[in-house]
Length: 159
Image (cartoon, rainbow, N blue to C red; front, top):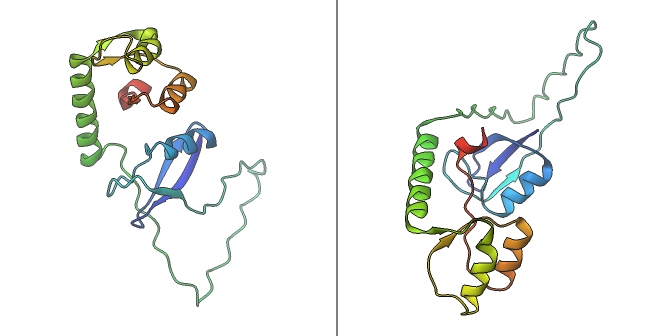
């Protein structure tokens, strides 16, 4: 796991955990990383000092030098609540959207990529479908102009 200090284009600073640097970059490219303050998905990593594990626990940690008087004082970002009201509302909207998609689509499971391509080519009737596809299969469908919508798992499904 890796923790990043992030900042949105509106200037809000926040932190978030990711499985890896690649995981962050993938989620950021797909617009899945959003500011908890304003919901903006244009975010970037802020400069942050790395956390280094220490082996010298018996010695006191060095004391940091006081800030230079001319340096502007920057207020530390407020901690982000794991489940504040905005997060709860967003999760409820995601649950409602997913429930509607499940209710109004046919689940094809692993047959989804093939059937989506057949529908795109006119070899199968157009209808609302859902199913499973690997990242490579989804990428190939999108590159071929097949209109698909990757559906991220609900936050509860990851824990």
